[in-house]
Image (cartoon, rainbow, N blue to C red; front, side):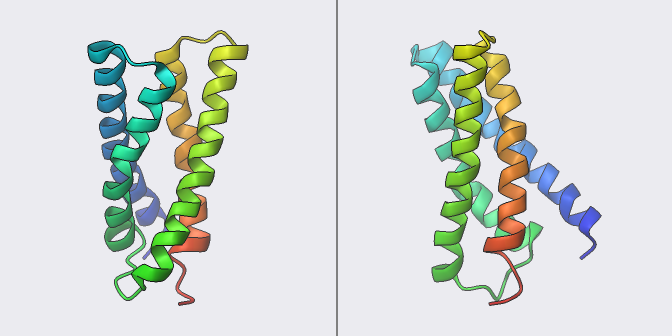
Length: 128
């Protein structure tokens, strides 16, 4: 598959995951009154399973890959991407005094870049 097609697919799935994440965050923050940090954690966890299956079967076409290898690596990639996103969220809100909703939105781009790179180079490599 051409890299441009893979990136386009990642953008589509990333947009779906962003919508899932944003909806959960918005409902928890606005509807339930949860803290922005707990809402952020719940939003990203909600999109995690959806992201794995779309990544495995559609973005990286890893139909022959082994779940017992890919799931832990996917979780490592998620942890790194989420950790950097969470750190950027804290810095933007607590240090930069940025609006919590805008910081949540910008954090999606940090997460997406790290997630794509790690899953391409680590989780769904052809070297099984």
